[in-house]
Amino acid sequence: MAVRNPSLVRLLVNVVLDGALGALAVPLAFWLARPEQPLASGFAIAAGAIALIAGGVPFGLATQYWRFAGLGDMRAIAGSAVLGAGLYALLFLAAGLALPSVSFPAIHALALATLLAVPRLAYRLWRDRRDGRAGEAGDAVPILLVGDGEGADLFLRALGRGRGALYRVLGLLAPSARQTGRRIQGQPILGTIAETEQILEKLAAAETPPRFLVVTTDLPGETLGHLLECADRAGLAVRRAPDPTRLAAASTARAQAGLDLRPIAIEDILNRKQVPLDRDGMARLIAGRRVLITGAGGSIGAELSRQVAGFGPAEIALLDNGEYALWQIDLELATAHPTLARSTLIADIRDAARLRAVCERFRPDLVFHAAALKHVPMVEANPLEGLLSNAVGTRNVADAARAAGATVMVQISTDKAVNPTSVMGAAKRLAEMYCQALDLAGREKAGGLRCITVRFGNVLGSTGSVVPLFQRQLAAGGPLTVTHPDMRRYFMTVREAVGLVLQAAVVGTTAPELSEAALGGIFVLDMGEPVKIVDLARQMIRLAGLRPETDIAIRFTGLRAGEKLFEEMFHGQEPPKPTRYPGLLMAAPRTADLAIISRALDELAGACSRGQEGQALALLARLVPEFSHNAAGAARA
Image 1 (cartoon, one colour):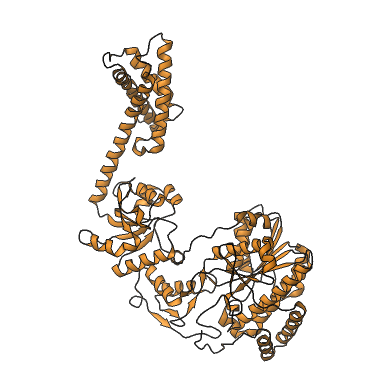
Image 2: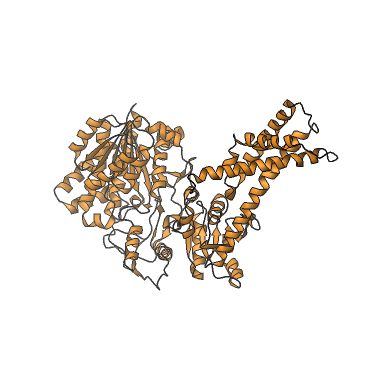
């Protein structure tokens, strides 16, 4: 007859086995306690079995899976042994019998723990060795794990849980030298990542060239880049294991088949040390307040919406001129934060009347202004639209926010505003100047609008950025197009950038030393070192498992209108001022009088509305004297 409940049968088998071990522990404990009188009665042996079974119930002893016996199971065994020995002593005394010695309960507990633990561990070792031989007998791919700690331990455990493993681990490469020579799950740490080439040379004589599998989540981008270069020279692949939480939850079949392994992403190469953020300060700034985000459908605006929503605002208003992008972020927030009050507003920041109406109805406490035209060649082709959006539009947002009683406005600026060579950059510098003037005016009046400007460089994966372009070109078989071999840009992930924007908002409104010492100052995100675009292209080709210039060509197309070779975060007249907040620097560019800059923006708006491009650009050059227009796209720093 078929077994109706296999789990019940397994439980009963475990109870019988544990009872037998509990019975066997009694004569062993008697012999250890009184070697000269080792005999134990039938009652004593039966009582030992009963006491152990009863003592193991609170610890789930009978439900243990011997195949996966681990540290947690050993703790349960120890607890069961102590409780079982205690119950046994009580039964013995209740029956009017004398214990062999005063120390007998402790000896009995040790005997129980030993007899329960040894068979479980022996069974696991036998199964692991058997499965390991099965894996070695097949066509297992040799791999070198890169990393140490929890990620390596979890991956090795997942790899050892199934038969016929597809991977055979040769050893590990550690981030630092102090781990060399040690072992994780029996696998040796062969050396450091810096010694990759030497380790490959040693393995080449006896082993098939291995693949690399990165099993740590916090490997610095520079270190990962070195590993990729070594792997590229050796013609080897590099992959990343799932995050530890996903790996621990993944099914054995998927882990063995390699379906959870993923390629290294370009974000991993540019990974930088995580900057500690003041999450409590962000919560105090945002929680329970009404927040308006312009450009909410764009890359920066959408990430701002996600992070702001996580701090529990009373209501969030998403404003954008693009219907589809606005619908996407609204749908995402509706799923992630179903109880959050939201408003979706289709509006053009160039429409001052519409913005005033929006702010009067919504009454925002905080405004994050991310809406702008950001594509340099596109704005060069449409300069009046760029001026109306980036300069006049910023004033419209700021004025509407101030009239509606907002307390803080955060403006997103760009490194292209520093010594600008494009209309886009010069228009953003003009927007910086207006917000600086507005901030100075707000400080003079109690309860006035604080206007905080945050400047940073390129964001990985943002709309119109180089990374998605390279991905599309790779998918099409190349070539990858780079404007100039010497072009460099600053890069940061969108999540990191937005986290630091929120940090700047907290610091700008709460740090007294900055409020007093940096009047009209601009926060600048620490972007690290600039990256050569051609190097970025080569890395992306390698990450796709291809060879630069052999499998995929790189073609130089020349600078486009408005572009320059090197972007800057500060110009010569605004040396950076450090702050005590990691990731944030302070620039102190010249400021302008609010009334003067307002009249100039009125004149600029009039020239743009009349279609007077020459007059508008001449006025822009007068307002931003460092503007050196590179309309021809000539190579220049």
